[in-house]
Image (cartoon, rainbow, N blue to C red):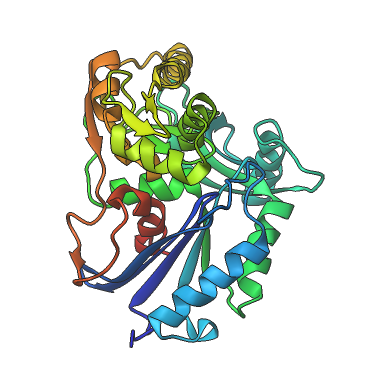
Length: 354
């Protein structure tokens, strides 16, 4: 049985396709993973829902996970959660130095420009990063925003299990926190983190002195799966398996199905993915003047797609790493079989300091 004392932190990342849970025991500089699991929300003949999973689908999976952990959910003292979706934004802006109440009001107004509202108010937090070297009269502010509906839906999901998260963080921030928890930012240039999820890919740019930037592009793992389903008449489950087995290159071995040949050709989606990433980075260069991209870091469930690492490295002439958050952590045997990159968000929120 896991001991849920003050040193154990549980990170939960409820994605649109998979629920990820990581339990991390912290003692000094030592980080030990005592439990991890990644459970698909859709299985068997269930098809992926672009509108996202329902609470009725999520809650039973969480119940089963906590049962496997051998702990009553309401006994968890330090559970943290990641909030994600269409109504989430993280952005750095320049602002005049203000008192906290005035800054909160100003950042709330700013956040409304960057997140699509859903009929509810914006839920906003911010952190002053430091002075702006180019304009000493202004400060750099990192703004994290979602909507009250999105935020409350997450809390209500855990509320059904009598859990109140101690920390809730945005997906792009938990992802970059995971990487920065074990890696140093370069002295020059920036790092580009690509969080390849099911519905979308989050592009986050971070540097030691350069502007923090985060934007979603509407190409994700589902885009590749959908193309294979349409082109070859496969079910969702069959296309998912084919995608990871045969990769994204067009020149792949044929797979016989019902007397015919199947040839996977995901090039059009792959090119569209590359074009969207390129368009996002060009915008970043235009806004900041920073064009030195030190490396790409791939996280999320789609990070394990075959050939994606080579495709991006060739297209952008840059080093590409598939991030494994567990390389510098001690992991108890028998914990988790999913690709390590899918756990980045859950690890990021679990290791975050208060």
